[in-house]
Length: 578
Image: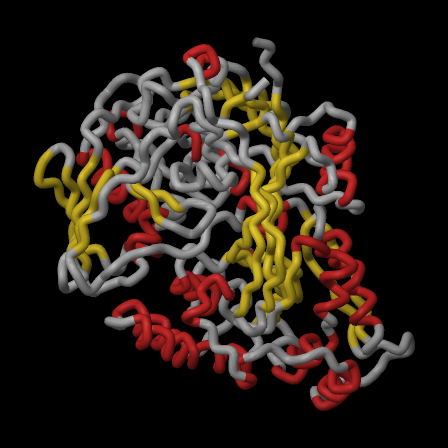
């Protein structure tokens, strides 16, 4: 059978917005069985689905229709099953990795690559659910202080050495000791990590943490082999540049500026049926418009998250499959509250009033947007405070001007109250979003100069150095609602707003030890009231993701029939039908 080279275009911004929420029970002892079994051989494991409908994010109500086209899975033969195997999947992405260390510093360019080379104890799928990974079951003590993970016993690293509980202990010890990307999630609450045998790991916490499972399942917790990485500088520039993991694909080579190639792991612990592919090649393509045109020309088989200006040319195409996912990544305007005049609430209110969310969505974000006015994603509907005193300010140009003048600002010779620079990303939809925002601000006397940056440059300038005044971005608010703390608690790593409120800090800590969801909801409700009053940032749209690919490609991680088996960007179950 002729094998096709498939090229997947993935939006860099969407990489940061992949999984939301978690499932855990801190009040009772819990034993979860593994659901991470191989996809049924010979079935249409990659059913393509186009989910349409309407959601009012400001009220939390949803009207959704699922139109699913399923392939014929009857009459499968051994010959048909054999046809699922082989081929090279060429994955295009907008940014080349800086490092291949999965647990070091934040690097969106490596995310989908490391998801295929490494495994975690648990992983999160596209429906915000926690799935087994290296741990096939886990238990939580009744007091919520002890988490026991039972590992698969047939796992080997890519060099053939067995993976045991000692490697798990080593990994988390190194993350904490060397300041890995997940260190802040664990370094103040883990009392000890011990092994009762080679395949049982016990985490002892100082206090209950309702988000612990989601933290373990999220980024920065890939299990590393002690025998290879012990004694190495965890955060150095060349750390783990020849990665050895336990994942479905094995590291092969990196042609700088061009591509990274992985090959099938013949000894994958979820095998022997998977993975189906022989190779996965990640090709670096920086221009989204070029990718869209290549897709239309038949040069690219999977477009991923790139959205064209005219969506009908793709979404109305019967040869194209589209998976729809609502992410906990939210479009927002962020302020640097440590820089004047954004240390003045009246100025922040002025910007909030001046923003027309309907216009920003219709002219820039389009199908990827869904208007919102809440400080918590509607994916966590149980925690959202829909009361008016917890909502963002409504569009009102007259009130925007009034606030600017209340702040003591006067117009200059050019007729502007202020001149400033907006930092944002140099790819869609932010390119158009910045232009619409610039126009809206001009209507109330604010002159905005746009500074377009690649993600890595934005991360350094805004997140790390906090060298900015305002930014348009898409901030991730998952995988658990408690992750909001990383953006609003004093000195947390995603709090590039410089926001500090002692009551918010205490409330977010209290939410982690609350015994019931009702108690948590009340706490989060108060947090949202404070955020609405302080306005460290202005959320104005949810991010609705569309992952687009040719219909003959099955087993994509975003597809409805495979979502219960893998994490985002994991290609274990991908195969060709022609």
